[in-house]
Every structure is written in structure tokens, then in C-alpha cells.
Image (cartoon, rainbow, N blue to C red; front, side):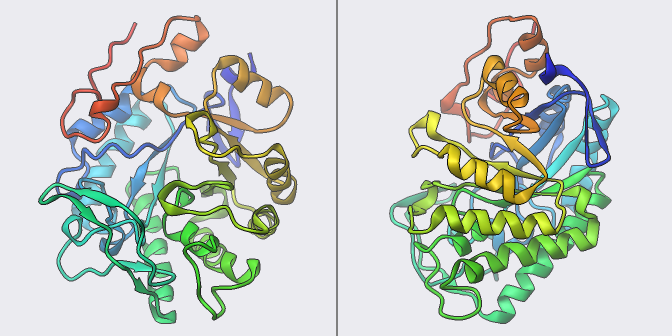
Length: 356
């Protein structure tokens, strides 16, 4: 089957077409990658490509408890152990850079940090903090033009740190209601300057970050994740959505990024991601597409054979089955994920899933 064949991703040789999706797991105590995480990622090195959980490019991007960063030396050294362990098993691994923007709370952040967003619009609901439990989302600070430039520089430095830590590349998290997506979506971006209003202006932050990161580490090492029709983290379905993502994909295609990773959470109850928007993104981008969304072996193979994607991503199946590739090859039954331990500290529901 094609999903098990080797493939070349912009000069990076992958042993198969299977991608382990990025999944926040909140095991990084003090925001530093640790030995438990080394075990977790190395257990899953049979994937053609691992994309890490969301990693903060700066202290301002730390929205959740116990998510890792890559902006100081301890974090870089922690990630180096992980990339070494994955490479020792002949695996490949990209880091996902996730600035959470307004999806944050000061209790989850370091001192002297600021919750930043395109506009001063608070999210509805509450978020979990280790220190005070559930807390209402605060109103973020609307970013100044200088803060936009500074944040872009932080993405670039984080990408350079990632390459220094041994990563094969970087995925920019432009999906699921985090900072880049907050600029794209009209529900979170009410600016009236060069970064708000038209689809061109709302796409500008994403394009500039991608351009600067690609210039710093190489376009073949730079991918991006997008979520058309995504409503996670208070994102809204807005007029002209498909046109916006078609335009953005075209501009990213001009940069020759290595891939666009399209989020599709419709299998989990989210709005349908239409075939039309997927097709528009693929055609406008003209490069590699990572397809995702409730896939099994047959659906993944069909996507590759019908050329609707170049790689296929599995999330929870890789979490619950470190040996997923072997199980899919041999049609073995899959472990089911333990939802109660998704974001809890410790090895339970993280590194203790049984393998064949």
C-alpha cells in the first residue's frame, strides 16, 4: 500500500507517508522538555514524520499549563534529547511553533509577560490553570505594529533554536484559534490597519511569519497548519472564508513552503471542512498537502491514490498506539485513547499504552 512506501518531502526522506499529528499533552514541567517526553516521542519514531505538540516560540506564547517552549537554553537542550532519540530510530521530526495569543491566562505564564492578540477581544468561557483551577479568559492587549514585528522575530528565533536542537523542520501553527489564526479570522481580528479588514490584510501576519522563518531556516524545512471552517477557541465561520484560504494558500505557494497541513475536525463534531476549500487550497498552493481528520487505513490510502493529499496524518491513534504503523500494516486491533489523561502530568495515558 502507498501509505507504507517511502516518500521524499522536499529533500527530507520519510520512511512512509504516515504523519503523527501535533497533540498538546501538557507533560513539560516548568515548560521544559523532559525524559518522559523523550520516551513518548521515541516510542512513535516509526511514523514517517512526527510533528510535535504545540511549542511556545516565546514566553508571551505560553497559554496553557505545562506546554513546552523553545526560547531558552534549557528548553533547547531538552528538545535535543528528543530529536536525538527519534533520529536514533531513523525517524524524522518537525516542531510545531504555537503562539497561543489570547488563548491564555496569566496564571499559566511567566512573570513580566503579556497576553497579546490582534484585537482586544476576550474569548468566552474559562481555561484551566494549575494554580487556581478554572479561570475566565482575560481580555488580551491589542498588538501594536512594533509588537507584531517583535512577535515575528520571536518565531524566527524559535525556528533557529529548533534547528539548533536537531529538528528536521518547523510547522507554524496557523490553525485552531491560536495567534496566526486569530489574525486570519474576522471574529478575532477587528483591526483597521494593514493587518485587518480585507483578506489580504488578515493574511499578512501569517505570510510574513512564514516568509521570515523560511528565509531563516529554509523553505524546505518550513510548513504551516491551517483550519478552514474551524470554530475551536471561539473562531467563527465568516463571509469569504474559502476565498481567504485560497488567497492565503496561493501566497504561501509563492514562498515554496514544504507543506500545508489542513485540519479537519469534522469527525469530532466540528463543522464540515468542504471538499471545495480543500481543493482550492491544494490547487492554489501547488505543493505538498498533509491531509487529516478521522482517518483509517482505507481512507488514508484513498486520499493518496486520489491525489487529495501527499501525506496523511493520524492523531489520537498514534497517541494510543505507539506501534501504529505495525498495527496498520498487519490489521491488528487498535488501543483506544484514555481521554481522562490527555492533559494530566505523568506517564499514565502517555507512555504506558501497550504495544504488540
